Image (cartoon, rainbow, N blue to C red; front, side, top):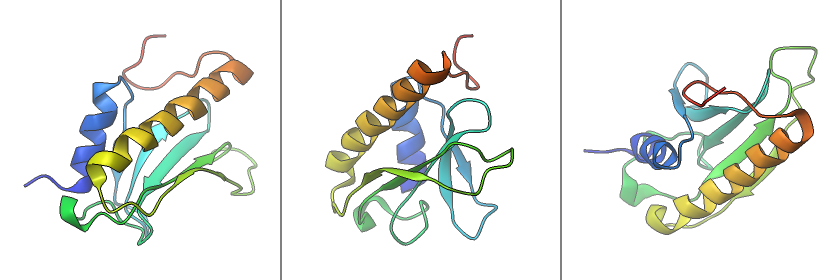
Length: 118
């Protein structure tokens, strides 16, 4: 049975965005590289992504501009919903991610992530 993390990673992959499931933190999340030291973290409002598809309660995506350097841990919420339909919510989340990645790319040049052309 597919869980939400697998569903989201597959949906991202379908639009050429590489997402990684991370379970090492207090929070389970899907991460996306968004440039040098920057990432987008995606979870639900209960800080998990390993739930059954019919238990969806919305996505929360945050852009962290500096996870590797002298960053303060500041982030920007790029998407937040309370949708109970993962099928309707995920395309909206992906559009927000695409916009954030494009904005980052426009500011710093092309963002490079694993699996994307250099």
